Image 1 (cartoon, one colour):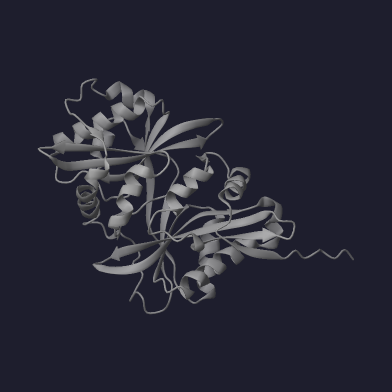
Image 2 (image 1 turned 120 degrees about the vertical axis):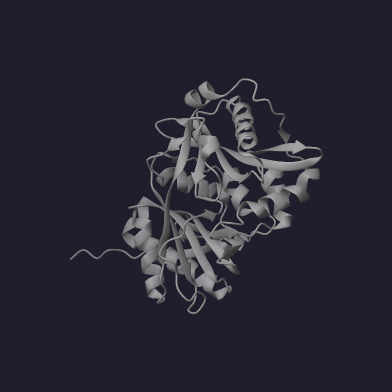
Length: 334
């Protein structure tokens, strides 16, 4: 009788991002973002972040076999604020699939968050993928409910279509965000998710990093009479889909109280700028917290991939009940 060898795995806190990037590139199926080390750092290394909440499993041979990051944030839900984690970058090497590392890694990180005193868990998964069952099993093992509370899609704007609808003179002057805009930008970002059912609490110390100093990031603002009245924060992300191209990803949208016509001109002016960078498409998460019409009028349409927002308490009694569905959320979606 053949006896299958047993391999042990060590937990590695905050593993080297070059190794994490290599793991992702080897195991993610296109179409997907190409998460190079600096793209991972732009999400994990913000001032209020905690890289020790990113953990890998390493084989005896020294190979990184699995990785999962829980990105800390404060989360507002139904008027109350919670200490939360956003689960992201979950990757397991196909080489070690028989070791059932998916379940082990999820449960490891759920227990780590519980031990650190976090209240809520949120994540975005692709509908129909095994990750959904892995998350469900991890929370079931601790007697906790997890629900998909909203399905959503990206709005995608192909460069050729969007450029054909842009007025070559949008009639609006925009400029890049500067450090001096930090306080006004903080106010705008804080207001952006005010009406959303679930929203991140924007931390003042993260604003300049988020809008200016992160790698691959550019932020445009609309200013009138010395006041910053709107901003769009964009990441330039390499994407693998048959070939390696470049997409622009609209991460933070804060249109303030601009009239409809003014917000449309602002979005049009920003699209004019970023299409000049040679991107193939522009992606916007349609999560219900902002008006999508300025993008739709430029030819943005729902992308085919359906995504799910998962929500779960990390211990009993945090929520009286996990909602079955929410109408909007304002979160970074990595």
